[in-house]
Length: 171
Image 1 (cartoon, rainbow, N blue to C red):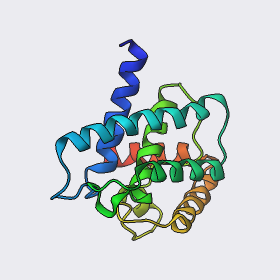
Image 2 (image 1 turned 180 degrees about the vertical axis):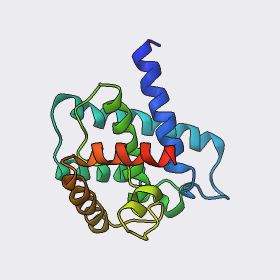
Image 3 (image 1 turned 90 degrees about the vertical axis):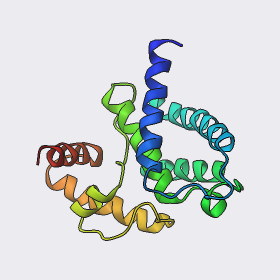
């Protein structure tokens, strides 16, 4: 494994941790460790494949939502997952956080959105629980709210979120 592969895997591990840790993703009775491990390995390959598009070109918000839906579809019919698939909120956090790591390390252009979690939703004045959200129309409202705040500061959504996270870490 080379340096790049190592970093990509570490970014995935960090992203899975950020997306899954509070998401109640796995069923308690059906989630064998072998199933979880196999699923995470397959999910990592699928995520890397999707993210290759972000290296080549600047991805639009619409295409980005399609990519979130691709990952949701990839997760369907998994009897060890609650709801037998990943929720939209979990997948947006996974993809957006992974892209944030790639962007901050200079591997891709700026992503179109940011990882929406409790801290960012509070900054937006939103009360929804991102881990339970399963509605892309609501997600679009989050994006629009973030875009409005970012533009007030002459920033893109990803830049705004990075600034907000850094501010919250210093408080």
